[in-house]
Image (cartoon, rainbow, N blue to C red; front, side, top):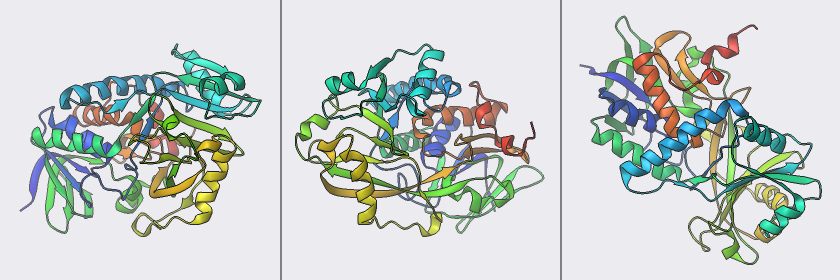
Length: 381
C-alpha cells in the first residue's frame, strides 16, 4: 500500500531541504526523498562555502528575491540560534568595459543598494592581497558574504523533521507519474502518493523527468583550496572579502579562509565547465585543472597562488539563459519545478524554499519569479 501525503519532494539538497522546511512548518504532510544521505557531496550543494551577493551581476530583476533571502537567512539564524550568513563584504572586479562590474553596478544603482565603486588604486589600498590591472574597477558590497551549504541543508532538514516531515534518504527514485487524483513516486523501497510533487533533483532532473524536456546542461566544476605563499592571516574573514573577478575570458571566485589559516583558502573558476553525466561524474582533479586556477590567481592575488591543498568536484545544472527553473510545470499544475540552478542559486535558497511552498499551496509566489518561469523556453515572443 502506498504512503500518502499532501506533497512529495524529490531531492533534498539546497532547494529540496528548504522546501520541506517551509512546507512542513505550514502544516502540510510532507514526504521528502533523496537517493543519497543528507548534506552529501554528490551534487551541487556542497563545498564548504557559497557566496551571497546583493548587487547582483545577473540583473536587477534578481535583487528583490535576494532581499527576501537576506531576511530569511536571518530568520533561519533565529530559529536555530546560530548564524548561517556571514557578512564579510564582497567585491566584484574586472575591466570597466567588461560584463561583470558594469552589470553589478547597474543592479546596485537601479535598486538603490549601498555600494562603493572603486578604481584599481583604491582596490589595492583597501585590499592589499589584490593586484588588479590598471583598467580594472570594482563594486564593493558590504552586505555580501558567505554561507556554509552543508550546515544550511542540515538545518533545514532538522527543522522539517521537527515540523513532522517524513524524510527518506538512500532511496533512489525509479518512477514519477501523475495519476487521476494526484502524483505517484516509486523508489526501490516504497511507493508514495500525494496531491502535489516538487521536483528539486538538481542535475538528475533531465534523467528522472525526461518528459519535462527542460534544456538543462550538466557541467562538471572543480573547487580548490590553496595554502597562501605568505600571510595566511590576510585571508581570514574580516580581512578578505568574498570576491568574483572577470579577466582573461573567465570569471574566477574565492572566499575567505573560513576554517582558519590551516584550512586553506577556496578559489575556482565560475565560468566554463565540461559536460557531465551526474551518475558517472569524474571526481579526480588533474594537475592541469589546478594550474588553470593558479594561473588566474597569480595575476590577481599572487599571495594566494601557493601550494594546492585539496579539492572538490560539483555540478552546475545550467539553463541556456543561466536563470533558474522555478514554477508550475507547463504539463501539470500538480508539479512544481525547482532546478536549473546554473551555479548561483544557493544564495537564494531560503527564498526559493518559501516560493516553492507558496506555489504548492497557492499556485503562485509572493515574490516575482517570472524570470524563472519553466515555460519560457518554449515561448515565441
